[in-house]
Length: 312
Image 1 (cartoon, helix red, strand yellow):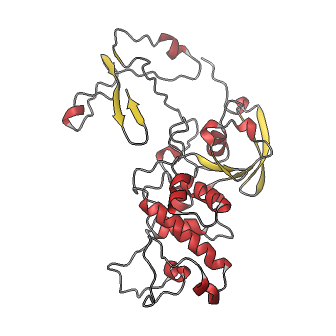
Image 2 (image 1 turned 60 degrees about the horizontal axis):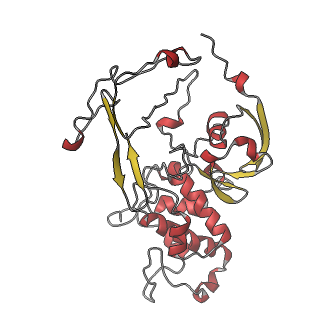
Image 3 (image 1 turned 60 degrees about the vertical axis):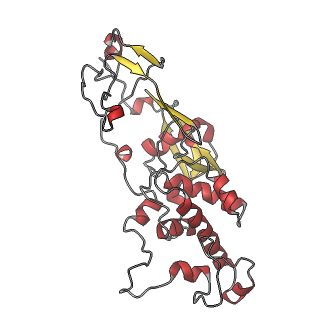
């Protein structure tokens, strides 16, 4: 069996601007820019999610607009301006959005965070003072299973105020039209805080920890894309797994012939349900499920308010 070396497959080349720096890259012509960013340039802050443009985890800014890079071929991006989460901060300092996300718990597991951050930046670049509904609409294509979105909305609102505090002199804060703090609470004359910047950066007595919000120790890593997940690990000569799904919603498996697949160049192993006869279900409704289909396939549909999702 002969396998083409990875380097020999890199027959395409583009030059584009990545996070403010002109970048030349060689890559295989079939790759999306998401794959080029992660696999060829080592920018793993942009996450690899559904590959279908549904989850939003791969969003970056392309010429200032939020784009899902799992759907964009790298060959289309020559001469373009690309901004990822790694390029949000300046001079070693976090962008106000990153600061707010870390401070207000808007970054939980952190997998969806980079894409939401750049999407929110695109919104604020176009509309510096968005309403809650406009924020909700802007990030509606970014799925998050941890936060429930409320912390994300509040973090974007807090960033708006923090950005405004840098643009408006301190003595003019009392004439600013808004009079609410992040989260929608109304400011009042007895409130000791004078600016939203003070609200975000207030220094608390070290002994006052109960009831006081604290930044998570991994907050900075999660809002800068530095947190490494299993999909971010690349090792020399690493093998990749591809799942084959049934085209039929419900069917019995009579035979699976793996001869041609096994003989294909670059394929090291083909596994079927007979090779992995493991039941993994936890709930009673799923205790008869196998890691890989054994004698039948079935369609299980999960309805949600956003969309219907299925797994076989």
